Length: 69
Image (tube, rainbow, N blue to C red; front, side, top):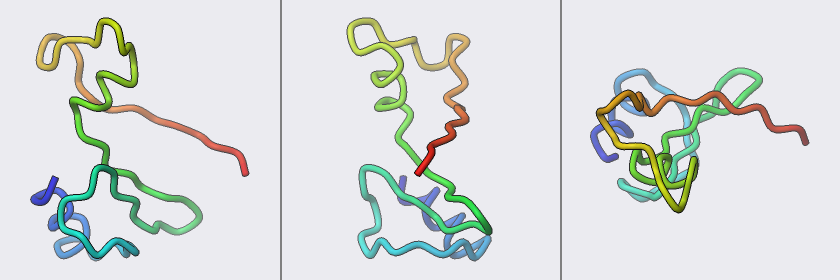
């Protein structure tokens, strides 16, 4: 997570309000939206807590979410 945060924050310049280097979830400010980093293992568990998909066996770990306010 720390390397990903550094890439998006320092390398690409995406703004974020978080101060810690390796939070459980990290949101970045984008024009009109938010970009989120979520650990792959937690994403798999979020998909199916009782039987998460195997990482590296067809599960790419990318999702698209739309949330209304």
